[in-house]
Image 1 (cartoon, rainbow, N blue to C red):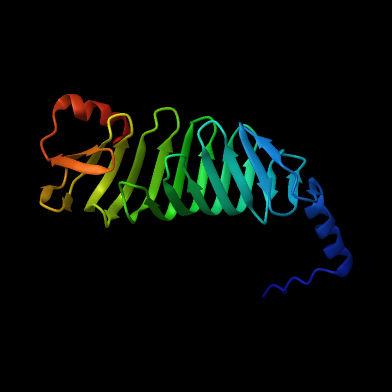
Image 2: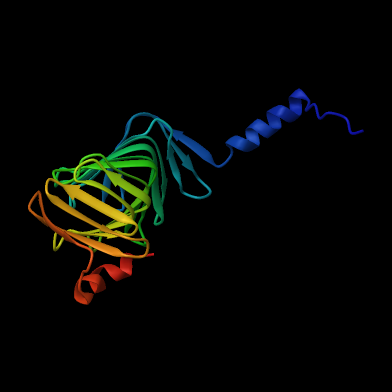
Length: 222
């Protein structure tokens, strides 16, 4: 039988020192510029001198003046040229949308913001929209949600969702159903249902969208 490992005090000190090597703590809430984002930490910043990554253990606020996006999170990790990862995050948009998630990852190279873990979203069109995961494609503006999507207004459920902000159309992947007032539509598993908004109002929904409409959504269907 092997003996339990009991590190000696001197060894513990050495291990602690090694664990601190390559890290530097920056005190104060000094603003950080990161890939076009202005980030204001709540507390200290921990810089890894080996990788260049910065950890914000007390979180902070990231704003993008160009898109009007604002991200507030309990914790953040910045990896230069790669990603910004935020935990217990709330993201708001210039258009008035609010997204909350356990984790948000901003991938600089892919140009995507991916939210996971009990994701909820609301704006003037949707109330209590929820899904296990959502993604925002910054270049096109498309938004996707998957893993089972639900919303209170309009009342809907679907396997997945894709929103095109350019046409104000939403594609639901089946099985899916939507209802609001007298408007009702549904489609079976494997089907496609398209919702059309006029401003903040749901105008119509069809389970037989044309091929031209489907072609716009196809790159975002997985």
